[in-house]
Amino acid sequence: MNKTDVIIIGAGPVGLFAVHQLGIKGLKAVVIDNLDKAGGQCIELYPDKPIYDIPAIPECTGKELTNRLLEQIKPFKTKFYLNERVEEVKSKDDNWIVKTSNKNEFIAPNIIIAGGVGSFEPRKLSTQNTEKFEGKSIFYSVKSKEEFKNKNICVFGGGDSALDWTLELSKYSKITLIHRRDNFRGAPHTLNEIKKLQKDGKISIKTPFQLDRIEGDKKITAIIIKDDNGKKEKIPADIVLSFFGLVMKLGPIAEWGLNMDKKTITVNPNNFETNKKGIFAAGDICSYPGKLKLILSGFHEVALASVECFKRARPNEKYRFEFTTSSKTIQDRLGKK
Image (cartoon, rainbow, N blue to C red):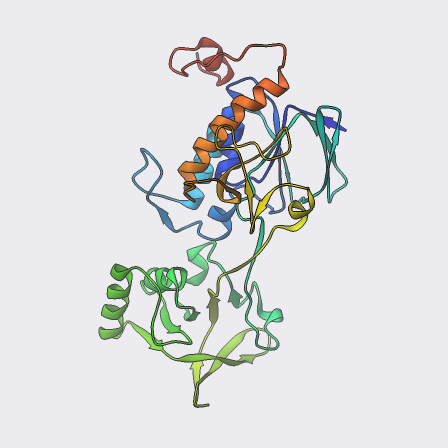
């Protein structure tokens, strides 16, 4: 059994910053995530999409933010357990024992749940025979723009993701945007840009249409779409991008006896502790009066949670708040000379 000071569930931005806040206090942590890489939603859903609300960083992508956070926590040599799902949490004395899907066991006085919205997967196309094309010609996210250059791409969806990627990929590919309604949900500026591209003949928009079937053997060659009156159209296609949102699943978290508010965990906003002593929640998965679902809010939440974690992990030591600019101890932990 692996013993540590804090078990962090979730390797998104908030979980990564938790490593930093714990590390500068001298606490050791392990990070468990059911995805195959660190970054959470930033990597899984919008690695190339700009983020504008990180303090002191005017603009960065989800991938860039993840890489900067990973660089920031390098001095702490934290162990990551990826492709693992927490299956069981139980108490023992003043500690928590966590068991994962890969049969790993951990024991610690503290758990920080930074699992975003829990386990998530894209809402998939309901048309028959789509599975054989998934990951080859059908995609539910864009992880590398290079794979989508010089292609005939059909984008399904009416929200921000569909509109943003239509704009971006139209720079070097032929795009057909398809939505089941005439109206799109998106920022006014984005909608204006979309209309301009359509007017200039740089993209094609098909509404109100839905996918009827896919043609092709090993690769997609064309798709057939159908409107509300049964009228069908055939569109040549190499790639189908579908943005119908996500299916959120809390998974085993819902069975741990935590106070829940719909699909979020209620916490004490003074230290972000749940109704279970030593279990904290931060980021999108937690709720409290005035909660804002922003990455920077999650950073604040784990900063306060880490103080309470210190008190539980080091009950015989008095916590002393120190500025990183003036504390030699903190600078030593960060590897600064």
